[in-house]
Length: 274
DNA sequence: AAACGTTCCCGAGGCGGCGT
DNA sequence: ACGCCGCCTCGGGAACGTTT
Image (cartoon, rainbow, N blue to C red):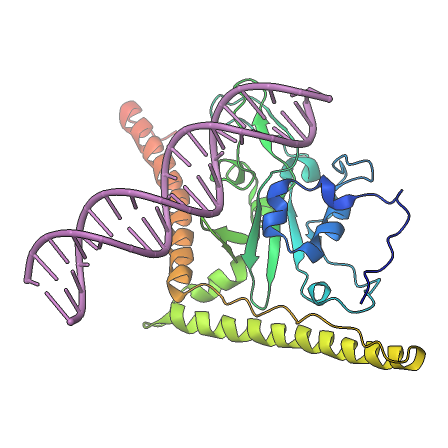
């Protein structure tokens, strides 16, 4: 099958706007639609961000069917400064930070039934000490009010990330191997979703074959194999996420304890409760 | 100020050696 | 012979520097 004739050359080369690191994490089928969400046709970052969630467009469907199209992943855009206009302070000097472009790293987050991308639309940076801060670091999240902070969807580890909903299920209500049980349960849901997408692709291939058979005589298009199933991380990893989650709460509790301790210190020194 | 490119550091995983 | 521990290497992420 010949590649489809290229469109007029004036067409915007959307994927060239993406940082090179994006292309290592994002699947090629996700490059263009995500670039269109993030950038203006001129290559400038979009300044107005309306929503956190972005979904791959269902139209137009590629013809002949391409397997990558059926396995695209949604995107969560995290941009507290641009989106909500929340002023952030430098964790080092306390001065106001500005946003310096897009955060060059993408994270992949594992959800209950599929995966999605976590993209940082702000790259907070201090104007005075030039200190850049990871947009989802504790320094940033702790500066947000609870309502906005809880909108952040995932618990991160060094490699991957896990959606909050999943973390809830990891809190062991009973004793036993909850993380390995949960891992296999999530893997099963993921594999069902993968099978559903594979069936969609194969059935569209079949439709395409029938359509082609009506017009052409002999040339049967060669379809590529559907994407292989991506296995989930080990149960051990889920355990790591769970402990990360606990540790992050520990920091919050430490904060509470410190402030309480501070009040008590004050009370002790003045012998009065303020 | 915003965005991009690069470097450095840290963490995880793998392999090899030693001890039981 | 098997298991555990330690070291080394590689990759990813954060920080830094530069350019427009």
